[in-house]
Image 1 (cartoon, rainbow, N blue to C red):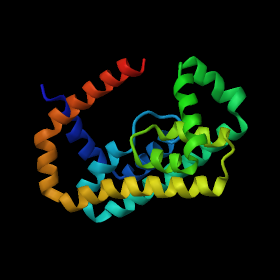
Image 2: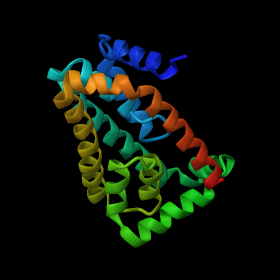
Image 3: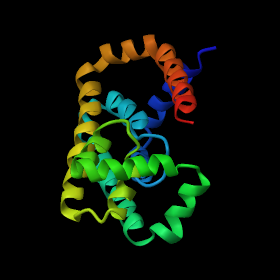
Length: 192
């Protein structure tokens, strides 16, 4: 059974949908506040399916993600105790959140940039920046640069890779998909 090939093909179809940009923006926004799935899973096939719009898609993802990051920041700044703290306790994320706060103390705004660019959960750091009452302008700039660099890199790889990239992705999608599942399971048991 080729599960990831079917999912990949569906993502390519959705990427051509007339509301695909709206879905991408909504996913990018939500991922910066609470949603666990990164927008790259939609951005990459969209950029591959319509390479002439790759920069536009990356821009949508960046702006929506940074706006979501601002909402996360405000949640941490104003609503941490009544809303966020009980959720962290309920989800058993206190250790992870404490680690994020320690990183803020040590590295400051660089943590926001790193979380924006890397697969580290950006939402934890947007909320953490608000809790730590980080200066807003540096937070905003680090978010915009980190998220923009990530999304434009994904779009660039798809745009410039073109048909060859699509063929390589299709060839290895099952291996990549199952490898990701294995990594998630291993990470779960290691961080548990």
